[in-house]
Image 1 (cartoon, rainbow, N blue to C red):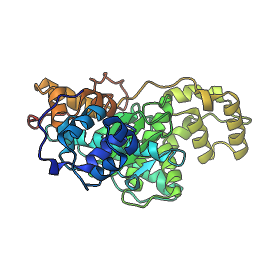
Image 2 (cartoon, rainbow, N blue to C red):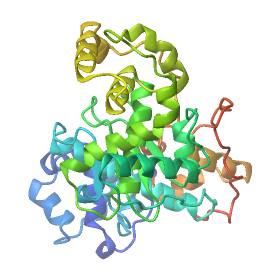
Image 3 (cartoon, rainbow, N blue to C red):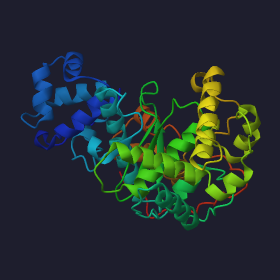
Length: 379
């Protein structure tokens, strides 16, 4: 149970904050009401600003939802809303699942806001490029790689690091048994959220690149189904630049031998499924070869059980680095939590990667500029 503190004036209670905390915990209004011994209608009225809770009810809310009482007495600054975000597997994800990950995203942005007041994060360097046709998207991906210093003739060793160095912040947290692979939100700083349940690192690299495509191609646009195929094409071109990839892809006179693509996967760190699709898009294999390859892929059980030769994990680094820098300056996680009015349990769910990152491999991984503190976080 979080420590009790004197609550501010009840009239400053923020119903939106209660709703975010409730949804984050996966509770309906009726379920929360039952736990703190008030009616469903009372919870609804508090969330809608029609009544203010007593100090006793605030303490019960705090104990049940895992936030310090002060959490509920300030406005929500930047709430994640569904219309602002691009979801992968959106159609198959229940509304309750989407709402829960959106509430987690809202909390993550609050954490990021507190960190940015005291730590200089990488500058946001994501261009807006309007591209729709395949050739336009290929060119857009090449431009972005060049802008980020990745070139167009070699694999990207660490996609997460490349994106975060460009100012995109990556978060990952549990998204309900794979119902959502990833989603992104455009804003002053683009954010990509990944599902920690994702077991395939090569597919997670594609997901990150797909969401980066939305930030580049679709910022400020209404969502459409066509955007998903455009983002897939961008992700393929970003991970596997056409000229370099085509030069290395084996030439098959007959069926595509999937095992022969494993060395290529180990080099490019893209899934075999993505490489086969890329080869088809670049006309390196025929439609018949492509269809036969996918039948072979399914027969091996790779779509369900996973592919061999997966690359190493790519953990988000910006937020863990920010915490590390603050701790070097004498600012503990506990101080950050007090500022947010969170308990450690909330932090572990919103940002499970807040640990010092391991030193990455060599290659075309561009190191971060030094992240420095601005000023001390004050409670």
